[in-house]
Length: 451
Image 1 (tube, rainbow, N blue to C red):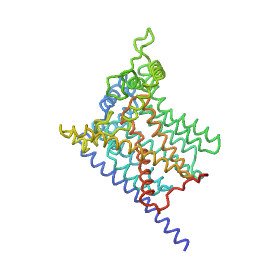
Image 2: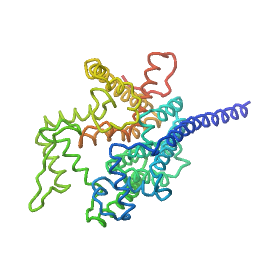
Image 3: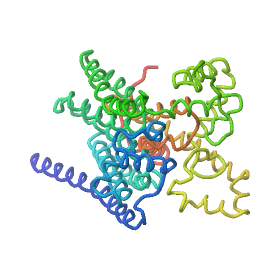
Image 4: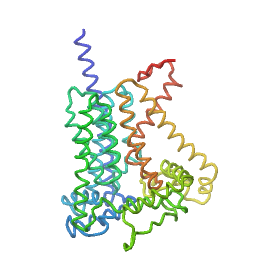
C-alpha cells in the first residue's frame, strides 16, 4: 500500500510538472506565431533607435567603434543584437525577439517549477499564467529594449537561489553562486543599474547562510564574477574612446530628476545644471553625481516632494491621467481599452477627469496594497518561504529606490515586474484565504507569536 501511494505521488508530481511546462510552451508557441506575423519581427522600444544605431556602428566599425551612442547608452545591449546579427543581418530584429522570448520562457518555466517544489505550489499554475500572459511584460520580449532580458535575469536568479536553499544538501553552493553571478553580470552588462540589485541579492543570500565562510564565498565570488562582463564593457569603451565608463547617461539621468524646477518626471522641462570645474567645459560624471547629491542634501523638503512624485510615477499605470514615463511604445497600448477611449475628445475628458483619476489611483494603490500584502503573507512562514520573500523583494524594492536617484518612470519597474506580479498574486491568494475560504488552512504556517 505504501509503495502504491508513493508511486501515485510520483506520477502526480510528474503530471503537475508536465502541465506547468505545457502552459509555458503553449504561450511561447503563440508568441512565435506573433513574431513571424510582424513585418520586422519586433517593435521598437523607448530607446530602440539608439540601440539599433549602436548595432549599426558595431557592424560598420567593429567592436571598438568610436560612435558616441555606444558610450552614452550602455553598449551591452547593442552587442547582444550584433551577436545575433551574425546569424542573419537582415533578420536581426526577428532573431532578437525569438531570443528574448526563449530566455523569458526559460526563466518563467524555471521560476514556476521551483515554486511547485515549495510550500507555495498552489501559486505555480496561476504564476505561470500571469507571467506568461501579462500583456506588458510578456510582449516586452518582442520589443527592442533590454527590459525583457533584465526581467528574465531577475526571475532566474531568484529561482536558482531559492532552489539551492530548498535542496542545499544536493546542490553545489559554488556552482549556484557562479550561475547567479553570470546571469546578474549579463543583466548589468545591458543596464548598469542592475549591478546594485545583484550586489544586494548576494548580501541577503549570504546572510541566510549558517557560516561566515559561506557568506564570504557568496559575496566575494559572486561580486567578482558579476563584474566580469561590465568590466569588459568598460575596457571596450576605454579602448575605443578613452572613457572608463559603463554609460554616460547615468549621471545625465540623475540631473533630470533633481533641481528647483524638476517635478520628478522624465518629460518635464526641469533639471539640475551642474557647473564643471575649470578648465573643463563640461562636468564629469563624478562631479555631476556629487552635485546632485549635494542638492538633495541642501533641499530636504523639495527632495522629499520629488521622491514622492517619483514613487507615484514609478508605479503609475501604463495609460490614464497618472501615467508618467517612457512607455508610449508599450505593445499593450495597441489594444488597451483606456488608450482607445482616450483617442476621442469626449473620451479624453472622461479619462482625464475625476472618473479617470479615481480609477487610476485605485489601480495604483490597490496594486501596491496587494504587493505589500503578498510579501507579508509569504514572509509569515517560518520556513524557506520567508527567505524567498526577502530574495524576491530585493529587486522590487531596490529597483524603486534606484528610481528615486534618477526620475520617476514606469518603464523602470519592468526588470522587477515578474517578481512584483508574483507578490501581487500572493496578495490575492492571501485575500481569498482570509475572506472567501476562512475554513481552509493557509498554505503557509504562520510564525507563533508571544502575547
